[in-house]
Each structure stands twice: as structure tokens, then as C-alpha cells.
Image (cartoon, rainbow, N blue to C red):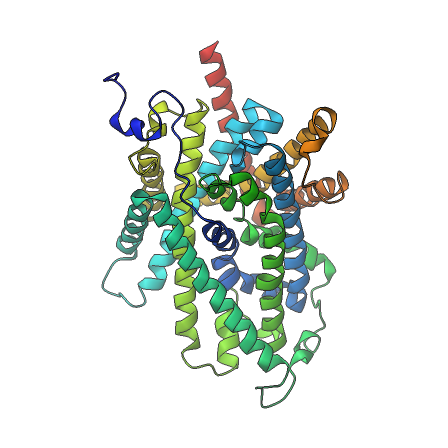
Length: 462
């Protein structure tokens, strides 16, 4: 045996490309898909949308959900037709070339590194209510350390934690929909049916339909995250089949968990009573006089935050592992331990997130503000690359191997073009809206820097 080969490389194959564990089961992948969608963006962030557009927020979320559904269907088509390519960034690589794989991989890694820091801060703020004598930054560091440890144990450990985190969120939403539905229909409400709230306070769309469409720009980011399951599916026994099943399941979950829960909120509570930044779920529970409603929602939001933190650490490490596997990141990052976990990639991802967390404390108004802004449209840029890759991959397969297209994109090519037009409209809106323009330009700047990095890498190898 070559003594220069790290011992941990042995677990993944000494001379071949190290192979990740295939220990995730279908139940893990399904719950990871749910967990990627249901986060603090639903439980807290929806308050901003409702306060801006009124009951028509239901339509706003439906439009944002439609875009995500179309993107997931594109991914499902490519996963089913191109075995061996399952992870989210590699769809762009397969369809558009090396530069797209490099850019999508690093942008995806960057996005989730920032998200991990944001979620650690959010979790710390919640826990500081019950731990007033502990500094929030210390709680944030402890949360990151705890879930880094979970990710280091094994892929199965990550999957189990995410399964239970997601199950708690699902049960909480189902319970909320049932309780609120009972109230809205007059079964438990003393004053009877409350669906009049949908139109009684300025109409269904009190700010106009233009505001309903404009709000898609913010709500679509709350819906991002389902693609995490494509990364996790690569560590299951049948990755292509696991990814291909996602489109229908994600569609159902968006309809049930987002649209139905938002509908229940605006049916029970006059939309004008929803306060931006305060959970509309908690407001609704208070309106229905549910005991300990605020505390219950704080616990559910904390679970959502921990779930996102757990998945963020997982996906950043796998993004680095994938980049290293293609020669776009240092090769020592592909080393696996005996449980087939890319330990070095996990630790590096965690260290960068610690750095982002430190910037929130040391330079909240400059460095950390830039980090948040520069991740603003990153996911839309990634989704646009996926759409372009789907169009090229579909055209190639139709010429060379049409039998591979077992699962097809809806209304091709118009479904893809519709998603592209919608995403470009959202990006264009952000570019011209003064309070969102900084996110547009900062995100483009970071994407430009990564492209320059690819150019420099290419020149160095020539």
C-alpha cells in the first residue's frame, strides 16, 4: 500500500474516487425534502408577506411554489435520464459544462455557509429567552458545534436527526391546519365561520395585484431548499429513483403545508393584525385562545432553525466534497473516514460558518451585511443554470437517446421557459427596487468572483 495515501481514504476506495455512504433510506430522503422547504421562512417570514399583500398572500405563495415545482421537475427529469448525476450542482455541470459545475458548486456552498450562520443566530435568539445569562453568540457557537458533531458521526446520523426534526414540523403544521380549520369553519369558534376575514378588511388583495406579484420576490426564497434532497439522495441505495420521485411529493407538500396553512391564518385572523417579524402562527393560536400558543410556536421555530442548521452543515460539506471530486477544490477534501463521512469537508464548512458567525458580532453592519446581501439571489441564479441545463440535456437526449426520457418535464419546453421568465422577472424586480438592489449587485459580484476564480484556475492548468 502506498504510505502517502491517507488512512481515511481507504474507506472510500484506495485508488478510485472515494464513495460516500449509501445509508440514507427513502424515509430520510422524503423528510429531507420536507425539511428543506419548511423553515423559519414559513413560521415567521410569512408575516411580512401577509402584512404587505393581505389574504392574497395565498396567491403569492402559490406562484412562488409553482416556480419551485417546475425547477424540481426539471431536476427529476435529468436525474432519471442521466444515472450517475444526482447532486444539485452537477446537473449544471452535466448540461452546460465545467464552468457551470464550478460556479454552481461554489455558489451553492457559499449560500449555505451564510445560511448556517444566520440560522445559528436565529436559534441563539430563541434560546436566549430561556437562557438570559448566556450570551447569544455563545449559544450560536454551541448549536453549531452540536450539529457539526451530528454530521461528523455518520450520514445516517444526519438523516435520523433531520427525519425527526422534519416530522415534528410536519405534525405541528398538520395540527395547526386542523385546529385553525375547525375555528375558521365555525366548529370551534364561538362567533361561527370566520372566512369573512378573507375579504372584510379592504378586500382579498387590499394592496392591489401588483403587490401580490411583487411579493413573490421575497416568498420564493422561503420556498428554496427542496433541492437539498437531491444532494442527500446521492447517499441512498437508488439515487436516481429517489430524486425522480421528488417532483410530485414536493408539489403536494407545497400545496398542503404552505398554501393551506397561510389560508388558515388569513381566514382566522384579520390580516391587518399580523405583525411583520412576529410569527403569524403564534398570532393565530392566540386568537383561538390556544394555551401556551406563543411558547409552542417558539419551540416549533427552534426545531425549524435546528433542522436548517443541520441540513446547511450537511449540504456545504457535500458541495465541497463534490467540487474536490471534480478537481475544483483541494483534493484532500475528498478523504473519507471509516463511516464514509467527508470529515475534512464537514470541518472546513463548519469553520467558514464560524467565521461568518464571528462577522455578525465583529462587523454586523458591513461584512455580515454583505454576506447576507450577497446570498440574496444566489439560489435563483442556481435555478436558472438548472433550467438552462435541462433545456440542453433534453435536446441532446432527444437526439441521441430518447428512450432515457422516462420522466419528462411538464409542457416542455414551455414549462421551463415559464420558470425562467418568472425567475428573471423576480431578479429584475429586485434590481430596480431600491431596498433590494444591494442584494442583486452583491450576489452578482460574488458570482463574478467565482467565475474569475474558474478563469484563473483554467489559466494555471494550461
